[in-house]
Image (cartoon, rainbow, N blue to C red):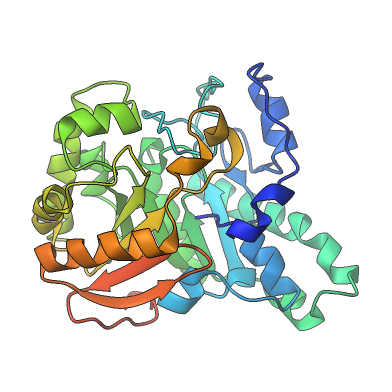
Length: 326
């Protein structure tokens, strides 16, 4: 669940071209650390900011997550969609693993990777030493870095393994594998919904199969029955999927989530090969769309983060920190 503020967009170091290098080279250039054969870890901008006492991400504001103690990982980099707005290199083929690593291996190696990635903050004059020490003991995992996590066959066991170690667990899925959606119970369950109708879905998400749209509908119905806290997340791309709030509302009603996050597409990474900068909505535009969606849903505005261009809706206009399941 990585974030980058608008004023930092021009500071992104990676140079883009239409000649996509091999996958391993891409991972290294983009700052990923491999945690075993098919999992990956990467620190986000907000972790670095938190280490330097420069603020926390909107997940801190909305849900009480400490950015410097948040481990962002992917159990698999495989994905069954190639979303236009994805900052990842969806153009590069991802090799399928010959064998899956166990959940215990992934958890252990992901924590090791996180510690290695933040090593430099230990000796940095700009970083708070207390934050660095805390960061070496991550306590929240965002299973959302890249790829589609529900394609990892032992995802329920992976979530359980993190929770055994005292983590709160966030899971973000595109909802295309309802059989796995039914099996997972993180502390907070996110599902992306990036189109109000089938035609827009094909254009925006470019699924491997058009039949995945029906799978998304199945997953929305499953979410309604989940004991986990649930969130529907919409990434708005101006001129592409930023219309028809009534259509989004009808789909979201199937899930009846605790929260709805509406966030602007950010013109970053490899998405710049697919979309123009003008496709990035302003915060004011996101807020206006969110208010229309709230009316259609019967939800209320709970919070917003202008720097991240994101708005939070809830049924009663309230928010609360994420908590471990009892």
